[in-house]
Amino acid sequence: MSWWKNPKRSKFGKWLDSKGVTQIDFAEESSVSRRTIWRVCNEKNYIPSTSVLKKIMKTVRTIDKNKQTNDFFDL
Image (cartoon, rainbow, N blue to C red; front, side):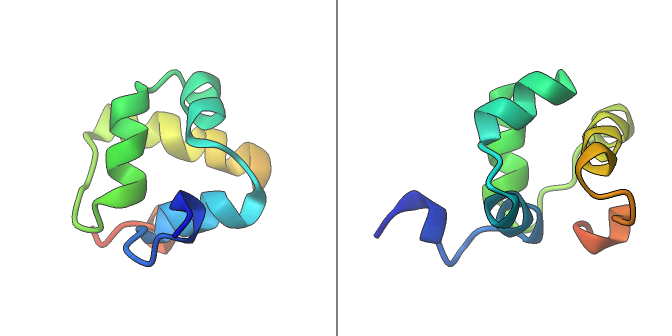
């Protein structure tokens, strides 16, 4: 099975895949470590710190202006 078809991907990971954005590209664009982006994409219960969440959502909104934090995370 290919990594991009991993059924255990989080909502965020599945969204990134659907947009054709790699984790590495997203990490660089958002100034968040690749390890943290990996965790956000692959650990369904992982919730990043507030400062990291702000960086992630700022970058998400450059791709889709209508996305909200609760579309990806159960806060």
